[in-house]
Amino acid sequence: MKYAILGSGAIGTALARRFAASAIEVSIANTAGPESLAGLVGELGSLIKPVTAVDALRADIVILAIPFDAVPDAVKAVDWGNRIVVDATNAVDFPAFTPRDLKGRLSTELVADAVLGARVVKAFNTLPAAVLGADPAVPGGRRVLFASGDEPSARATIIDLIERLGFAAVDLGGITEGGRAQQFGGGVAARQFVQLG
Ligand SMILES: NC(=O)c1ccc[n+]([C@@H]2O[C@H](COP(=O)([O-])OP(=O)(O)OC[C@H]3O[C@@H](n4cnc5c(N)ncnc54)[C@H](OP(=O)(O)O)[C@@H]3O)[C@@H](O)[C@H]2O)c1
Image 1 (cartoon, rainbow, N blue to C red):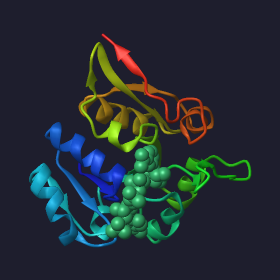
Image 2: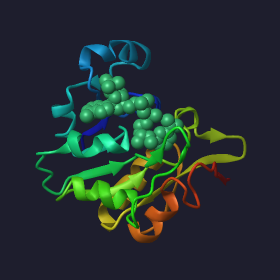
Image 3: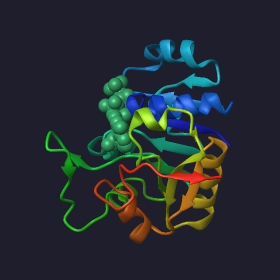
């Protein structure tokens, strides 16, 4: 199973840090190109593979860690062939830092429209980057991450990944309920939960 992170900013770097800590190989890409990621590899080690965005978009599991508005252009003309896209984006209005008015649609529904054919799972979007990148083992338990998606096997695959990265995974079911709770402004967004034990 080949993983890739599209985006090497706050969230992309935080995820790369957890992959490296869990000894799981992952490709990572940005707009600046693979050379710009030499420092990150120097810090995190050779399991972090800098690639072009085109190559990142060929992975079995592609995690979108780019601005919400950048998604349609970044993924256009990709043949997904049933691969998994993980939506880690949040639809936020800046500088107000309020949820974007999406005219009744969920942010992950709009991402799914942009990656037709892919199996979409929403995950990795509910914690601030600094918390996501930190050790999920905390006093008394593990930090919680959520996953929602309409395709059960894709959701199970990402729940397994979340657990392998050291977090406690909570399955929130399909996008209509789970995606709503997870998206920016939703019930579990920007809140930090710990599974005890
Ligand atoms: N920051 C948080 O705490 C946080 C928490 C939860 C969710 N999120 C969400 O996660 C996403 C990323 O946020 P962030 O804070 O990590 O943003 P960021 O620090 O601004 O980083 C954005 C990254 O996306 C890359 N990028 C933009 N367009 C691209 C494209 N077309 N192809 C490849 N890479 C592209 C940028 O590459 P270049 O720099 O090379 O242009 C940069 O590495 C957003 O949707 C945000 O709402 C953020």
